[in-house]
Image (cartoon, rainbow, N blue to C red):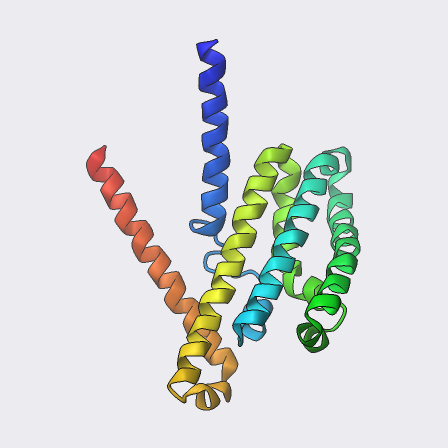
Length: 206
């Protein structure tokens, strides 16, 4: 009985690690460079960042869940096309929902906007990682990665809000790609700094 309880705790800890790593240690933007198009063009306003982050979260969970359930049954060469089809099918109701509740954002992105924005992170996670994991682990990693993805969007939208508040939005808006890349670089450096501090602290404890 105790052995089963210890095994359950070990499994739950592994799920938590996958979730937290998706947000921090293996953030798809800050450590993997995924989804740059979304980050550089979708975070000028907070409402747009929130909409795209929410849609990406839903699409990531859907694709990774189905990838985990059915991916192992497919030949390796069929997994990527399978993920493409899942992402395309899942984007239809999401886009319709965005059109209904956030028409301005939908008009700016178009019907394929969410799929286009999220595709690199989705394909990287669902085709290479989710199919190798059981459903709870795949969902934990997908949720963490999607939340990490969204947090970067929201953080950069905050940068734009600060620039607008100081009357610098128009000036920096002439080079939005440079501004976005610098923002991502600063966030990545900050993440690496705290990771190094944490590793040093763990080393002292050990």
